Length: 155
Ligand SMILES: *[C@@H]1O[C@H](CO)[C@@H](O)[C@H](O)[C@H]1NC(C)=O
Ligand SMILES: *[C@@H]1O[C@H](CO)[C@@H](O)[C@H](O)[C@H]1NC(C)=O
Ligand SMILES: *[C@@H]1O[C@H](CO)[C@@H](O)[C@H](O)[C@H]1NC(C)=O
Image 1 (cartoon, rainbow, N blue to C red):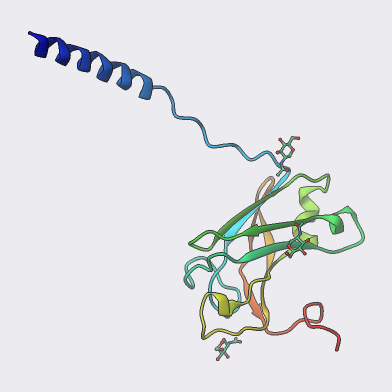
Image 2: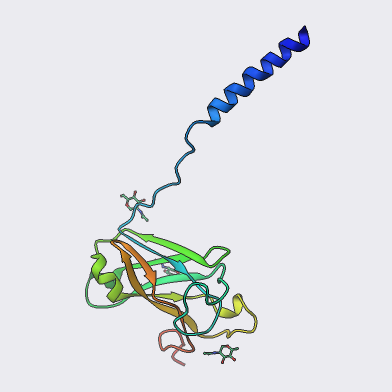
């Protein structure tokens, strides 16, 4: 008899638990931003590389760098790629999305040797931006640039 009552109690607890877990799961936090840049960084030193052209570059520091006379030149953001080479950055800005693609580019600051010991320790991966929809931008494709004036010390 006592055993039956115990089972009943367990049953009630189980039903209560099922009801509680039936509540909608918390939604992932939505990104509130004016500009979102997302994409894939390949671990390779080719040119115009697209997703799938190489393994991902995990833990790479990706910088959004903007130039020009307008307000866009002040735009800057950083992101670090995840374990598969994907990154996402979100920036609040007053810069019009239409001028972001023309003024900004992506530069991977982490040297390629960090993801593959046979790849160069100098030089950087760079990519222009392509506007996907409204405020979302993708890299056009990363290319390896062996040396660049702004990265190499003057003397
Ligand atoms: C952008 O601004 C909104 C509203 O002020 C804020 O909730 C959000 O966290 C900001 N996003 C970023 C990436 O700073
Ligand atoms: C991005 O990271 C670089 C190198 O750590 C730093 O110099 C720069 O200030 C950062 N930019 C932003 C917008 O956080
Ligand atoms: C890529 O790196 C390899 C190994 O360092 C080198 O032999 C090759 O010339 C590089 N390719 C380009 C396009 O720089």
